[in-house]
Image (cartoon, rainbow, N blue to C red; front, side, top):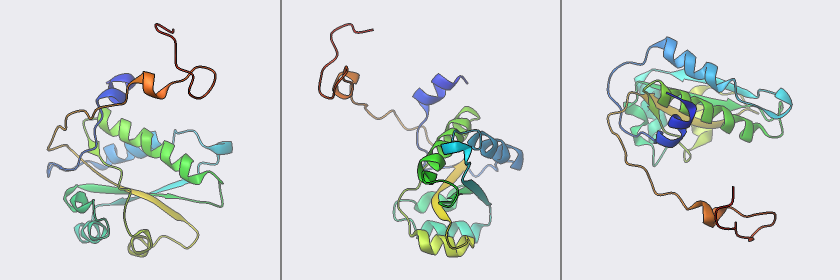
Length: 172
């Protein structure tokens, strides 16, 4: 799958097949994540691979909109280090985006879990004080194919030279 195809077709997946995701694929996703750009090449990210069902269920209980975490064959927790980069959250988000696109290109689905009790999740995952739990990503083979969500037209979000200055017709 080409990058452009992955960008336009990727969807957040919340239902997963029970089929196992091999370690080699999980490591391939993390390898793609670590290729992301970062401020001053700080690479402030670390990754925790979670397969233990009990741990996945505990994490799912901490995410009000992420109860489906427990049904994913594997979960990757993304940890960033504020000591390594002032922009650790942006750097981490870039790594996560690489991971999600790589997953989709390899036939896997995932979903960014944004709302969860991070402090309790850090305890469960034994993440040291001072490190930031950016997100947990359930990963698996999709058991659903969500339809694309509408996107705002370019004309509503793109300006020329200054904010609010509309693009002329047929601008290229």
